Image (cartoon, rainbow, N blue to C red):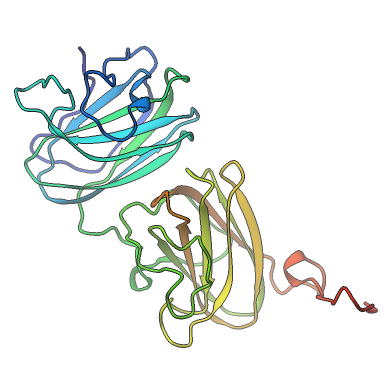
Length: 299
């Protein structure tokens, strides 16, 4: 039985492993020799294992990107083998398993304890290429609420390898001023943009770890009296969707990226652009509305 891992016994910091693959690593961890953690089907491919001992307690966010499919992330406190590799068996802490290659996972870890992270798959495929990043423990990641929203200094704006993992489910569709979308039930990440004029804005989410991703745009912070929903959308196709909306005022706009849970967390790439004021009826987001039961003349 071989384990491939990175150990940082004295100080655990945020790490990134790129260009990895489970191909050629052999199917060492199987449903018959590994402690249950989610579906046993995700222990049927080749696997790679990472081990770490954090020096501080808190939440860690694990972000997996892969061009493959049916990947699984399983995190254990202690040895994951049911036959034990150190005399004492471990316990399942968290897992994320789905048909997509990309996924994120949030988990709470305790200082001084040893954790094992397994990357595996539901064969077929037998193996997958992947990149993986693990944040240092924190009480809560930044950008989780309006007061520490990610600033958008100007448009166009783009950000890659974003995640809602460990940001908490702070805003939901039961809050005052909510967009009333089903895509408000997962953890949420907030961005803020200061509009200086009326304009037509487009938003694109791509490379999403789940098609259950969505967004909402507000004139202020959700849950605060006077805040209104400007626009929302959700439900990606192959991890991507785009839409647009018009704002008719100047001031702060709050963009909230969320999901229709499950999954509770999603990873994604974000792109926001402005078409300016534009000529009337020139773009889909400033099209002239009309009642299908009446005829109108557009000049």
